[in-house]
Image (cartoon, rainbow, N blue to C red; front, side, top):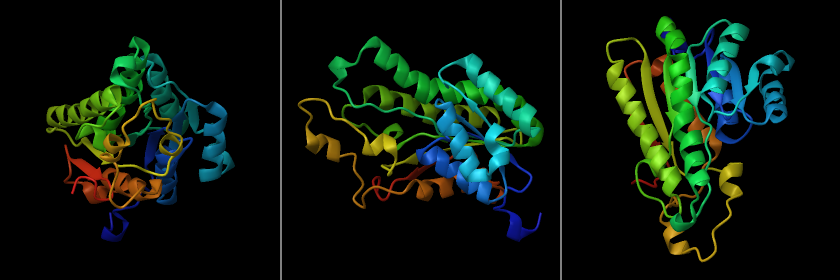
Length: 254
């Protein structure tokens, strides 16, 4: 490969979760613009289909699978559909996530289970299903955790627990697969201009001084700012990066 092409994804196949909006959509666009064929996964099938057409053209209408990443069977089926549709899998980008602010005392059993299912179980289920294909092709996984996986955030007990778990999953798998060409890394974004963040609702009696401890001093980022780092880690430019956890947070952790 020519050095000028190392950031290219020409000939690569990527599966991106959460591809219908926000960061997942931005990642799908960046990878597509750099030559990848992207298979999108999200819960809302029609929004996903429209996003894929907008990103990659009419041919991409079938390059997607409506999927609840909390289901191991659905994750397995999504990987199988990607491989059957596009002919393989080189890159798995686990972006899909869910974050609802709640007082910890008000978190129900169902709330807790859903926080872990979407933010931690899903990346594990998809990674497990993708491993045979990624190992065969010397591919890589990029997990999108959060700065909430590196520190505490108020009113986010389940989300923080899951994102800390995702950082741990990244490091554990990276160590396990050190002797293979497979690379596994994570990105921990701060606040972005995504529907999840801009549509936050706050619990009654919230202490906004605590909420603002999670804010970046430089404000919210655009999803594309984080998507470019995800693309870098998934590219051959990052061929020596394995088991890394990158904070992309507009100065939050400085």
